[in-house]
Image (cartoon, rainbow, N blue to C red; front, side, top):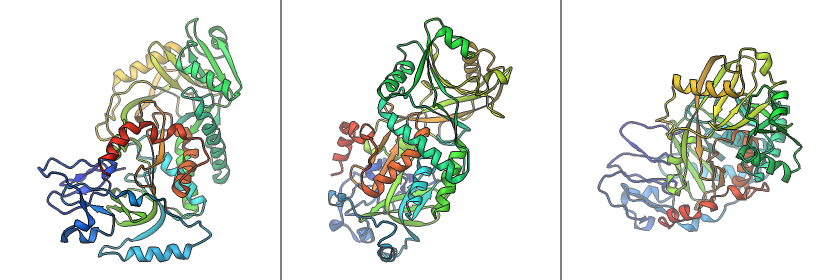
Amino acid sequence: MWRTYPQMWITPSGYPHHPGRVGAFFGDIMGITPPATGIVPRLVTASQGTRENTKLKRAVAHTVIQGNIAVPTRERADFPTIHTPDEGRRDIHKEEKKRSTRGKERCVEHYDVIVLGLGIMGSATVATLAQRGYHVLALEAFSRHHTNGSSHGRTRIIREAYFESPEYVPLVRRAYARWRELEEVTGRRLLHITGGLSIGRPESAFVAGALASAERHQIPYELLDASALMTRFPFRVPDDFVGLLESRAGFLDAEACLDACWDVAQRHGAALRFEEPVLQWWVDGEGVAVQTAKARYAADRLVITPGPWAPQVLAGLGLPLTVRRIVNVHFAPADPSRFAADRLPIYLLAVDEGQYYGFPALPEQGVKFGRHDAGEPCTPETCRRTVTADEIAALQSVLNRYVPGAADGVLWSFTCLYTMTPDEHFIIDRHPLWPQVVLACGFSGHGFKFGSVVGEIVSDLALNGKTEHPIGFLRLQRFAESTGSQAAKHQ
């Protein structure tokens, strides 16, 4: 979502610093580290500001001069009121006019909410906000269906017996319902039910975790021993393996999900701006302002869904985020009918070689297969986008060993990016200093299926400061030691 420009320093929050030029780094707590220019950072309040920063006083209680870092004071932390769609619209426009005339540089447009990033999380959020009647702008640096982030590709698995934690089950159930609702309003087929298998030894995370979620939430399942598993499905596994079969698992058409979100958003008046990189954003009183390569915008709320750019964008919060490069290959099976969706469900496979996931043979797609638990650290800029012959051969070998005949030939391969947290749970919360800013990131390789409900949750947090969905385990508070120490530096 953020790009690097020549002759300037782009801070992780997206603010460009031109050496020697007066600047205000309002995204400091989001991750700014001054360049090694020999300037010693010092806090400069607006009341102490020099003639050069006079016009910047209007934006925040503290400002920054030539690398001297400052952030808004805690007095700004009261959650401001936002008008509902059916009341106060005239007042919003009055405020828009008042804000747009501040200083010499005008805000081109004012919105209720601006969303940065149009991966699945940002796209679902824009659609939800627009459906609720709010005036929304979404900004994305790249084109539709770009392949630089984490939301591209043809398919994503969706499953209910959630091995990662039983706490996800209420959320994924709501996600199922929201995907169906989106199908109804757009006429697009998004969700395909095939059933799903979690395969491995009984003590493996895939099997034990799925069983724990199924038992806790009364999810119907069958537990198959190795013989039954191989009789009913085209697998070949060791005798001590089992398979947990759930009926509601399946896959999402990832590209159609994005298109459906964009259709709904635009149908309800949202502005989607692709290929418009964000240069900076800052807190402006109780609202926010965003500068792109094309224009300046203002809003009452800001939602940041940065995908694999999160470690840079949110570096100042001290979040332990890492990005991993993941390889997927679409294979041509020897006999596609043996691996069709009515004979082979989606599956998770925990074997001695590692943790893998796979799909049935789909028309014009073959059999998609990937490894879940390995991938070299990278950034979106340093990621090796070309898949090597050795990487393809390794996946082909594993797939043919446990699903014989599924990988007779190679159709195509691609890379995807996981943004990992240490506990592999998501981060969805309001910013610790600026309540008008909401963050959603760190989806750790299993987030896409939740996009429809994440859109609801993030919209709730942006508009109301709270949500009825059970997301306590996804809050920033669990990283309080690291985020607190970083935030304390700026108080």
